[in-house]
Amino acid sequence: MQQQTKIILFFLSLFLASSVYLFSIDSNYNKAGNNNDWYALYFTNPKSDDLSFAIKNFSSETNFHWEILADNKKIAEQNVSIQTDEELGFNPTAVDTEIKKYIIRVSAGNITQEIYKNIKK
Image (cartoon, rainbow, N blue to C red):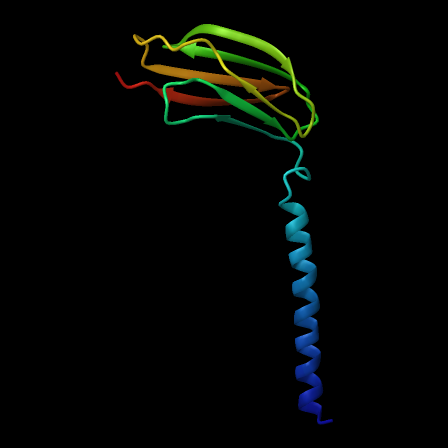
């Protein structure tokens, strides 16, 4: 075999091995359970006037506190326990038609997240 063919085959095999290695590291890093310092907070039906929301826990923290603010006044709150890799949904009471802006604030440990919903009249 010629020297040029050996060099080309060496670089191709090196490229293939490094690509496989880097793709495996990337796929492990991007799995939700591997980065366990976060949780997801979202409305279950974002286009309606319904305030139903869910929390999916990917952190080691299991004690959560949520509160609903309507025009910057607290109208509901609750402490809940959500285990790691568990999702829990909440269906708060009916929406007051006079209030335009709602904030749902969730705290777990030192992480606080908020989602907003503006109600159109």
